[in-house]
Length: 229
Image (cartoon, rainbow, N blue to C red; front, top):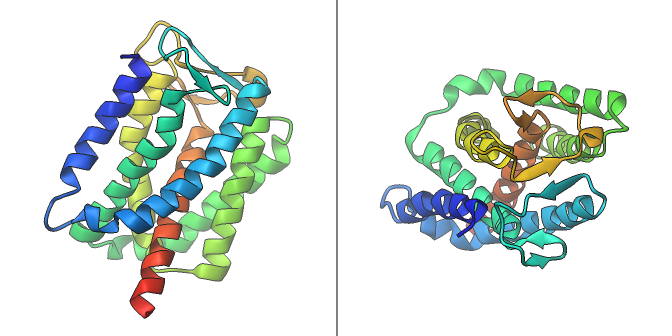
């Protein structure tokens, strides 16, 4: 088994086995969750395949299976299902076990901060393709949530976001060379700012935001619609 495949299997195993916890009962959210994950996967697989063809990033054959589908290793396809599943599981646990009243006074400030960060990146790093596309998607999502949807679950989202960065950065750190002689995923230096959190491009923190917020938004919209019916 490749390193990348092993990493995805380990990332999926824990959240999947804990999905049947009686209190969280994550399995009961599977239908709306999978709708959100599927939409998220379609968006990011198309983006990922195009970026790979453009040479914005590539994959080290020493750590992935050689079979490719639309220029992407199978492990990369699995990333867009495994990571959102595990990330939204953290969100579900927070909704069950943690009161988030402490973050509500700061919620708008946090959203404005990330809106400004995205705008800054779009304006000053428009020549960096990964930075630009990443920031545009994040900006659109945050503007919709801040000025149109304004849903109460965003307090839970922000707590989940900051907590899920820990396992996300562990996985991403391994993929970007933190634990191997060479990275599994190789970023073209011309398409990123160049700032890194150890080995992780700083843009990935924004990518993590969108990859979590999209499936949560769709899942919560479906649950709200069902509750109204």
